Image (cartoon, rainbow, N blue to C red; front, side, top):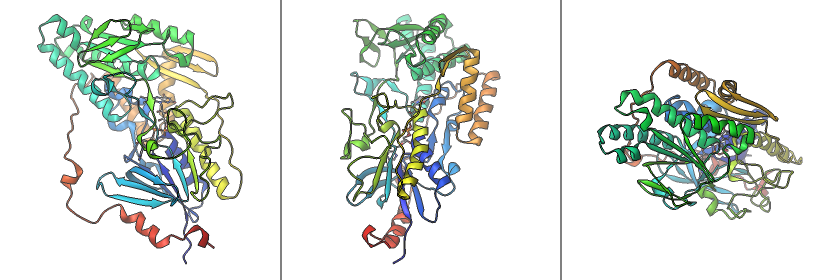
Length: 456
Ligand SMILES: Cc1cc2nc3c(=O)[nH]c(=O)nc-3n(C[C@H](O)[C@H](O)[C@H](O)COP(=O)(O)OP(=O)(O)OC[C@H]3O[C@@H](n4cnc5c(N)ncnc54)[C@H](O)[C@@H]3O)c2cc1C
């Protein structure tokens, strides 16, 4: 019987998934291996620049890298993984366009499905708050900002005007501060086009902690706090959110803030797929692989199953787990590619370990804070370093050029108030009945599959 290549299936085309696939593509001879990357969208989203989409500083498409531009040999599938059977080594999927379902077998499986926003922390968040984890979230938020200025133009009642023009961000971490800064910069930039006065805009940043930006330390956190307050932003520390309503947010100290815009930037939850999988997990439902990123207990007959990135909690040498950041997801992906290769050669995989280089945060007003290997930089230089670093780390030359041009143009041209509102017809209504697209791999597999115990 014809011998087939080993198939490595990667679930998730985020930081962890693409760097695993890129590492495999570079190191593995394609005469022996076939890599299949399954992602529910046909692009990779570069999260750190996403806040600039809601200010219009960067065009929405420019923070997305088409997966087909990144790979030459890796096979790609735009599909949602619905379930996995570890006994038969099958992954069940639903195609992104045709909605047709199918299944593939694997020899090695990589789970890199990221994390979702946790909408259960406080009542009302799921229904009334704006989350910030997808491109749709960024575009929806930008549309909301434009809508509210349009409404405020017509509103005569001062209290209702105040409600429309108050913007609350929950979370004083880097995402919260960067989103708030971009919202502020966008609104202040488009204000001259509306009959709304600058002093009518009210920005609030809420956090339970006694300081903001804990990730860069107290000194830089204090600097960032002073900068935000200096720009008139109301930073309320030691304050938690009790409940979110359509027209106000209730705080733990009994106060309420009248607002139509609560932007929720805190809390992660395991991706929905993990709920269906009988695998080792921690109390919150994240996967618990060993330090080499392999999930224990299913090496045989289920093949090797690996987990990394935001969906996994990998033990660090200090007895904790590595935090869910892109810095770690990228390094884990690179290490995992080496580990998969080692295991397939009968060698031992290496435990993951990485000491982060530092943290950079853009705090608005062309300023930033950076803590790099214990050294602190702040102000314009840190902001320039932030931009330079993300240009370098963006894994596509095409996108680097487009983002650079966006940044140059947005420094000279006025902010764009046009809204991107898209309500596409569902794919099923647009497509004639036809041959299911998903069969391409399944058929090959059926023809080529040789059970493990029958392999030469
Ligand atoms: C606004 C924002 C800014 C950030 N800025 C920074 C920063 O500056 N520095 C930093 O280090 N970190 C940053 N982070 C965190 C960082 O983006 C994450 O830690 C990183 O994306 C984790 O990578 P991942 O591959 O595990 O997950 P992701 O990048 O989220 O990728 C997971 C992928 O899996 C796909 N997927 C999930 N379930 C399925 C399924 N069932 N079927 C098919 N596909 C599926 C998803 O669609 C997604 O494409 C930021 C996060 C946000 C939200």
